[in-house]
Structures are given as C-alpha cells and as structure tokens.
Image 1: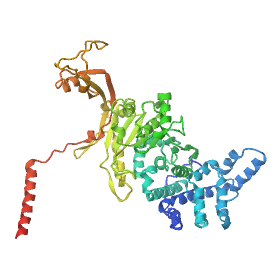
Image 2: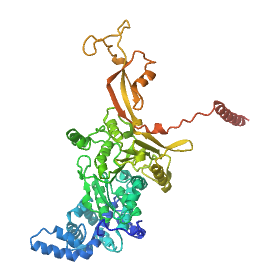
Image 3: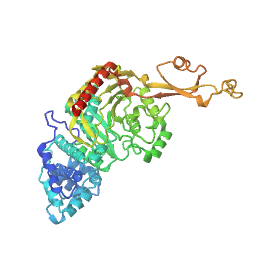
Length: 594
C-alpha cells in the first residue's frame, strides 16, 4: 500500500474477494442481539480499516519507533521522519499492534484506545468521525470487545495478501451491504452503483484515447462525496482504460460517518486522504481555489439551504462572478443549483485543458422559476456560456430515498466541435429492469446493456427515434431561451374612451390598465414584433408591448420535447367494444334469472 501512483496489473482482479468479504461479514454473528443490523457497520467498517492499517504498518513498525526515539532525543519534530520511515502517508507510534492489544484480556479497551491514539492525525480523524470510542465502550459493556478484536487479528490483510484494489472492492461491498440494511438513510450517502457507472462512462467517453497514454495523471472531485462511491467507480474505470494511469481523488462530505467511510476507503486504496475534507461544501469550501479535470456529484434533492443562507448570500454579493454564485441564487427551498454553480467554479480554464462535470438533479432545476429568477439566471448562464453537453432523463424509482424523476447533467468547457452551441437531450426513462428485491424507494435498475446503450447514444451525439418515439434530440442552446414581454392595454373611462397620461415622460400616451396587463413568453429564436402581430393583435388590437419590462429567461421543458401524441381510438371501435361487453353482461344476467 505505497501510494496512488502504484500501477495496478491489468489482470489484477478488482472484484471483491468473496471469502474475505464473507469472513468480515461473519463478525456480524458476534454482534447479533447486542446490535441492530443497521448498526453492524459502525463496528465492522472501522475494525476492517484498523486491521488493514495494522498489517500495512507491521513491516516498518520497529523502524518508526526507533526513528521516533532518535528524533525526540534530538528535540526535533519527528513527523516527516516518521512518514519516511513508515513508507506510507501515515504512521503509528504506539509500541503495540492489534495482537498486543488483546494480549492483556483485562485491559483491551484501554490498550485499543492507546493504540488508536498512536496514529498520525489524519488517520485518528477517521476513527473519531466513526465515533469508534463509543463502539469500544459498547462492545466492552457487552463483553464483545475481546472477541471482535480477536476475530480481526485472525485475518491477514497485508498488501502482499490482499492488494489495494481487492481491499477497496471488499470495503465497497461492505459499505453497500450496510447501506442496504439501513434503507431509511442509504439514499443520503449512497448513490446506486449503476447510476455512478453511467455517469463515469459519460464523463470519460470522449477522453478514452487521451486517458490511455502512458503516465497520464488526472484529478477528479466530488463535493458531496458520501461514502466515496463515485470516486471509486471513476478510479476503476480509468484502471480499465489504462492500468498505469493515476487518478488523484478529491472530495468533501458533511455527514461525519460517511466522511469517515470515504476517507477510510481512499486510505485503503492508497490515495492521499488529506484531499478528502469534512464540512459543508457550500458554506465552507475545503478545497478553495483548486481546479479539477473531472467532477461528479449527487447532491441532496430539494433540500433547503436556510442554515447557510447568510454565508452564501454574502459571497454572492461581495464576490459576484469572482466567487461561485455570481450568476444567481435559487430559492432557499432547494439548493441543488448551488452545487451546480460550485462545480462550475472548480473547472479548469479551457486554455489549461478544461473540465467535464456530471451531476444528478431532480426535475426542478430544469424549469422552476420564471424569467429573471435566480434559477432562470443560472440556466441562462450555463446555456449562454455553452457549458451543457447533455441532459439524460433516468427512470423513476432509481434511488433509495426517492422515487421521483431524476436527470444527469453533463457539462464541459471544452466541448468538441460537433457539440458547440448545442445541447443533447436523451430520454432514458424507459431503459430499466425490475430489481429482484426493492431497497427503500429503489425498485428499478439499469442493466449493463442499458448503460452501454445510453453511453453509445451520448457518444454518437445524434438524434435517435425508436418505435416512433424520440430517444435523443439535439437543440441549439438558444432554443431554451425566451423573452417574457409585458403586454399592456389602455385604461378606459366610463364612456369607453382611452385615458391619456397628462404629465411625465408618458405624457400623451395611453395609460395602461393594470387589470388588463398580461405577459407573453416569446422564444428567443423568434422576432418579438412578428410574434406580437400574429398572437396578440388579432385578439387585442389596442395592445402594446412595454419593452422596459422585458426579461430574458431560460427553461428546459424536457418532457414536452419527448411527448408523442397518441390519437384516441375511432369511436366506432370503442362503441363495438362496449356493445360486446354489454351483451356479455346481459347474457350473464339472463342466465341468473333462469
């Protein structure tokens, strides 16, 4: 477990070792009765991390302890020397290892605490976020601490036995199992793996040739990292394309337990865990000023941002477009578009190679808010700056905690020539298979074939129709824009005469009647006066447009673009069917009366 730079052999299996996974899962047998199923992960995950680190550091433990004594005797700060001696991005200065911890059965709890305290701060932070000390007390009170620790001591998790890739796959499998056992919260911190695979495919598809070059290094970022699933799948994909490539992972997470799991997962995979930050991304960006090649996110759907409103508004007002929220702010009831703006701020300048982003959003950001609203201004910004490559509609019932419609947005500031000035809409809402067993609200999943199909449609960037229904459509960016024009009509007196203004700049002009005021949304692609003459004047010859009140808006009415009118059946056919049913009922009634 040297570092993220170590190439993985092409043939090295990345799937979870079933025997190892089963062994770690068998610890649950000891917990049954004293722990709820949904709490098993609070013990098994941190103990798995602890044993892995214990095994990784074993060969250099004596050298680290000797280096510590030497540097402290010389009154030098030992940390850099200890890192060098350990050969890792972390170390442990305790004279004990896990085997020594259980050597004194009467003091396992104290020994275990002392051992954990010996880790370097970044690793200690993982166990603190897991609230592992609470679990130590709980296990000790249930007389389980020695048994559980002994069980983990019995498995060799040294990198010579279990590679970073295998260990990562096992850890991810455990994370998924615990997420499934805790349906009520799984959706908050765990994105379905097939959705992540689709997003990663869409993110990387146009770069596969570049990613296959020797020694390539790329960065990827997830501002709502959860347990690290999106980052992990991205790493797997790049390893498939080029085993010698290096993907440096960055992330931030608000939930302490999810943060601990993500950080532990990154540590197990040899990533630099100082790149994983804790806290609220929107109010306290832990990676301020940094830019990335790729970014992925599944932010919470429809969650209000009132708690951080003051901080966000302050940044928007003081920094404008030099900050993250210059284009506008959405309503406080839904912060989804704030995450979109945050991701855009993390894009490398196009001159430096640019970036590509994938984000899962619900339907609201597509159309909520009229012209001039925060939401519309954000859509205007991303469309007028030609950042949106595609939006893909997913099936409903895809996520653990909601059955609503969801959409994957793919954005880039380095669009290929054939995509410039256009947006591709893909309706994949009908591409799904029923799950054998529902998990919370999740009843549907994407098969490998569905993922390949959607990826192929996106890559081709062409319009597609199947069985008379559009699947992929391509629009110019201005097709989603419109002008909201204010249509005025004159105020009339009791005699029906038009009232004329007698002073001010409107002197001599008809006074508008507020009761008759109306608005019209005119597509940007159409001349306002031509539209007005065709749609308004035939019905209100005395109307005029108040151009000073005109606002530009943008919306993406996704469903409207894929609606196919199905004409009703002929009336004669319906009548014949009703007659058949009626005749059958009459025959049955006649049979009953005999």
